[in-house]
Length: 348
Image (cartoon, rainbow, N blue to C red; front, side, top):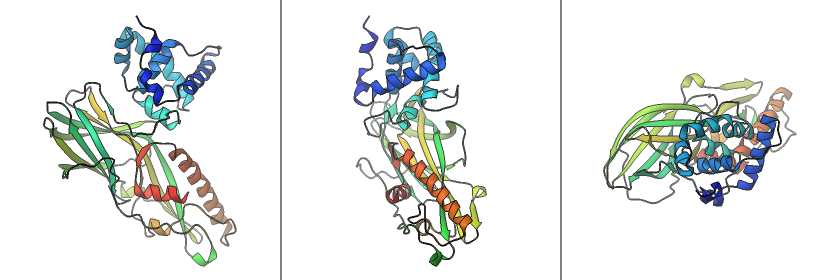
């Protein structure tokens, strides 16, 4: 039997394991109240999880009983990871969340838009791109069969890691204030990671985005795509926010608007329920139709000496501070980003 240190070592190239081991040990000490280091078993399980292996696959690899290993993870490593990533206790229900949580916590060292698949996958996601408008973003997914058998795509699982609210504003009397220059209107283009022959979308699915979520909110919809052996397919998800969540507020001579910033991944379930492929993180800015276009609104003030009502100026400063905090987090997430978000990031 080989040492635990010999398994799943390929993740060393992509993750800051030394810091991760150290920080998990600190979390473990806080939870247990004892000066205990992370064990070799916990280390190998951690490497397996961030490498995309399920607890059952890890157990088979290191010759452990699967049920016992799952119990050990639930009692130990999962709880340490919750504390490390500042999540509520007992909120880690799906082992697949370990990778996304630690990416957001900036422990991944390689930025490469990884696509997660099951070990025997016959299907591969070759491209994910965003297009459409800020009011109705279009998620475009291209898949390819890499085996010699067809695959039937059954469900799409939308896995929301976070939703942030960005605030923007327009001074009704612009001569009274000087803020950041208006951003140019983003052009609608696709962010293609790989070139391929022209493939028209076979189907477009509608999906209503939630305006708020609990931790790691998941919503599934049924899809129906059959991809033949060694064939390719392309399908889209048209997303939107219900009009009932339209948010506009006027404070004296200033209009304030709300935009929703989503961090999500889409898991495609095919054939048997244990077969899946997952997209990288998708970051997209979404809002309802407002009277003032996003190109005319401001997200960050350039001057604190704005001759405007004190209440609205204090609100501007507070919203600007929150926007900056949010974008600081977003900059550390390796993701497919919408052009509208990129414009705001460039301003920041």
